[in-house]
Length: 73
Image 1: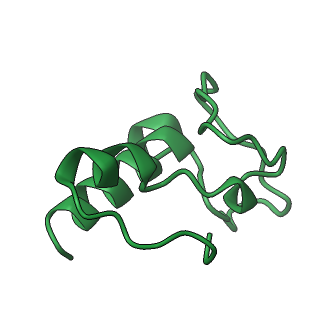
Image 2 (image 1 turned 45 degrees about the vertical axis):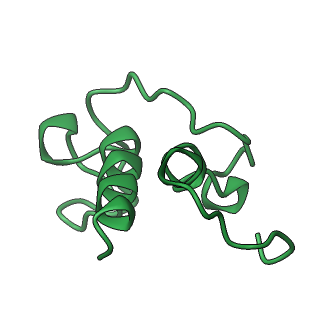
């Protein structure tokens, strides 16, 4: 999203971080809610992004990204 100027306000940052459609296979503008508890592995015992919801999922990843950005990390 290089076409927009930086956001000057906290609330604006909070609603825009983690919203890049390019990060989703579907190019959804709003991060999709992931209800899956387990994720497909291409090769046994070689995890890609996610394995099991308790250890991470796309929704948690977006939340962590937003929290880090708002904290200045």
